Image 1 (cartoon, rainbow, N blue to C red):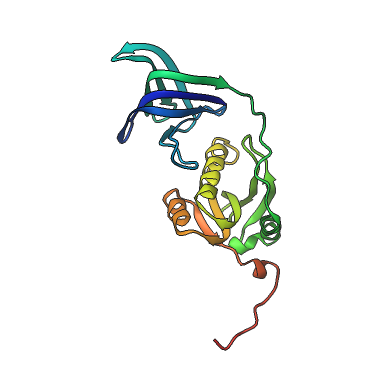
Image 2: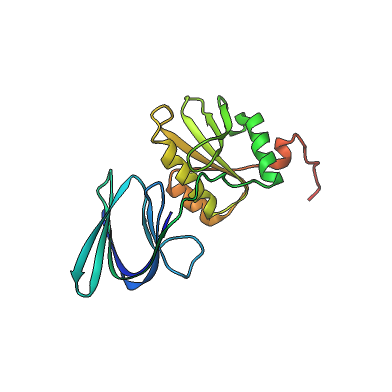
Length: 226
């Protein structure tokens, strides 16, 4: 992980164009090749970013007070992220090693176990490949195949929010590079899915499934008068 704090402007050139004016920002360059540009006013979402596969070219650039220009080019689409750096305040690299992945709480872990046991909850013909399918960025909760033998990656949460959709998106990007698995589609499964997370998942072609914990456990709810 390379951490850079710099006064920079950012221009995105692709299907659309976008411009961030000169300001102090945090630039993250990760081991997977991704580059993201962050401000100091939000928890996790970058101002702009480039997902792998991409390459970074650093150039000395002396024009209008700038000292460097970095060009991040996507390996497939050719889209570019151009950072014009006016001042470099901090530049360090750290080896983080392999991340063990998010540790589930008791309910999430049990939901994963129950859904794996009753994988046909998702539809007739579904078959389990394995739980905790390992990847370079952490384990996928469940990997399975649907009735058409297509690969399906499932991310399970107790409460489904945007960060869970982002997590599943990263897994799908990685899994779809494996010719033995691709194409891989995603299912975001939770007891409760927030509306914003559902909209983002739908936009990315990810199916949302609301899980009934008691039904998976085989507990039937008694009828009520009201």
